[in-house]
Length: 193
Image: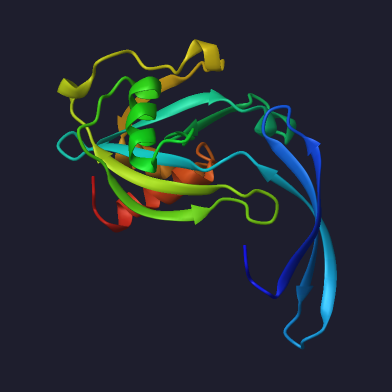
C-alpha cells in the first residue's frame, strides 16, 4: 500500500479466533488537502468466490440452504439462508476454489466456469473481495451428494429449482443473500436460463 494520501499509523490485533479483526488508525488526506484521522475495526476473512449453477435446457438452478448465525442474530428466526454455492479461496485461485466448492457443497463436478466480475462485499468493515462465477451443469456432472464438509461444520442442503421460482423468491423475501440476488439478476439480464 503506497498511496501517499493514506498513512497507516497503527494496527492493533483485536482477535484472530476465527479470522482477523484489527483496529486500524489511519491518517488520510482530504480533498481540500487537510489531514484527518480515522480509527476503524477491519475484519479480514480472506477473499472468496461464488457461483450460480444453471441448466439452460431444464430451466433450473442449483442453490443451497444453510444456517448462518449472523442472520439469526439479526432477526432471521430460522437462521437459514438460501444461497448460491460459495467459499473462501484458501490460497487457491478463484476458479480452482469455486470448482472445489461446487463439488463439496452441491455434488456437481464442473468442467468449466466463467468469471463474470468481482466486488467488495461490505467495504465499510470487511476486506473481502468476492469473485462471481456462472457455470452450466447437467445431471451427468453429479458425482456426490454435496452438503459440505463435516470437519468444516457444514450442513448444507442442496436445492434444484426452476430459475423463475428462484428469481421470484427475491421479491418474496425468501432469498435475502446479496451474492445470490446479484447472480440471479445477472442470469436474468443475460438470459442464461
